[in-house]
Image 1 (cartoon, rainbow, N blue to C red):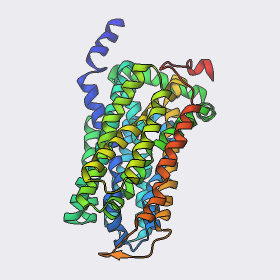
Image 2 (image 1 turned 90 degrees about the vertical axis):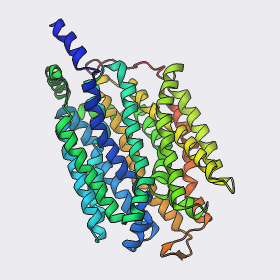
Image 3 (image 1 turned 135 degrees about the vertical axis):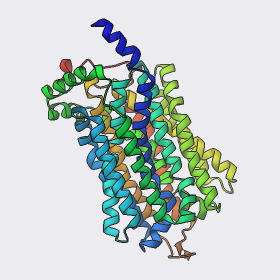
Image 4 (image 1 turned 30 degrees about the vertical axis):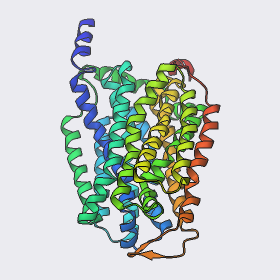
Length: 438
């Protein structure tokens, strides 16, 4: 038996096959990050096409987060108990169909439903990746694999900026969205052909795991996670530090840069893309630093303070060059990446069997913030708008934007105090197994 186990370790766990499976599944996360952030490239065109206000286009974009918010907790429960591949495929199909229909509809209600359905599918993307990685890689590889998965998502965020902006400019936003949907079809085929739930020799172990979870029940396990104060603190910290992605990356960044900073559409797309480049480099850097100094809380505090400094420079220093904006956008993405430390911190503060459920709390709070923040930002921008139009599109003054952008520095201040309240784990598990603690 031990010989067979050794063979499994050599041939399947941590192998090239394991990397192939997890990288293909990470395309699901990549795709959903495109969907989440694409409105930053097409918001003004959609606004004109559907005859919307800034507030209404904010609501339309936020329907994605309503759907995501609704499915986060059920996603964790389903992925713990059923085939990861099958659930991910169904979620991808729903999201892709919604994207294609959105590209063709002229009815606002149907457009809202499509964004909602795309968000529902996205509720499964991160947790399905974590669930799959935990079965194909040993524990001492998971942190790095998770970093690669997050990097794939950030690349999706970048694709939603300059490439989609250029594509929409050349073929129109509808054909750009249709192309986006066809990309989803390709990813569905790849997942169907390549992904497996676990190495063949892990099937018996996974079945035992399912029986273990069944023994304790969904409500019992979920109530344990919900009662954890640190789970919610980690969720709020990650959410507050993530707001630049929602506000600048997903919706208003390019419009702000064009109308307030006076740079071109292409230049604005480059600047916002640097936000995602910063996250790509910052995520593994903060993870490495946290492990190196054996602290979760210190890097979280550092990230909040330094993000506050950078965003104040970005908003209040006049006459910034494009080069300066590119650098500040990169730094903002890099420093707000301290948010990823919440994931290992929460994992260390919960029984190992409840890691996915605990992580779903973070996702729940993040998606709830998207539901609130994007419409709120649109409402604040349009609050004192004088209805000035330029080239058929609403033109906002600096004062219109600055009131809304205040959300970011305020959120960084709050996140500092949230991190102060979190328990320090010292990068060690602080809980025994579920059977000993629930």
